[in-house]
Image (tube, rainbow, N blue to C red; front, side, top):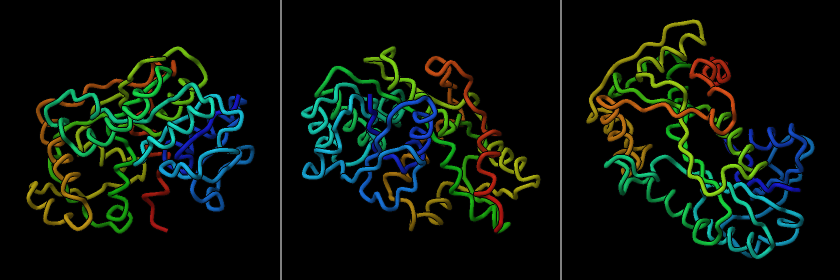
Length: 281
């Protein structure tokens, strides 16, 4: 059995490849630029574009039984090609926003995008598992330059509480669903094991670094003004609504344990794993 991993050079995909290889699985990685993939020995790297059907054929799908679907634009072309070439099991990386559990999710940038990705698979086959992680701990890397430089982090809603998930946990959950049929037809919510305020999240990074990180609370309006050049308006609205809502209704932790059989990694573990990202050169 060969498992095809799309988005193999990304945050989750890279760790998924490593996890599958460690479990003795034949892995093929699909990427637009194989020469830049820098993936571990043992993985077969092939060229292809999820949205371009002309790049999806042999050898992409030869002997492939199952596929991990990265939520890229235009993924419909990939799913059509995969099914035509005999792929019959899919694990889809989606987002908790697609569950539309809260009013803020309806019509948000994340919900609209990931709902379309889910439909590209569920509308074509019944053999799927959908993983819906909440906020990724890797989003905290957006603070890396301030932390490295010693500048204060300026952020709104410091008392709001989220449960950031370690990308390793998402990758291990994906591996488990690809290697068994135990979760067919399930859309599985995933978060970190603990809801922490944004101030506590900064403190966890500081603890890993062995120093205090200066932190300044600003208003949502100030945040908009300071980051509008870097964050598209729909994403800005989504983030501010999420942080606002989790002031009064913190994230409910839903760790990966039912899928992996292991407790989810804490934010302290994530910060320790990513310590080099926050350290000065």
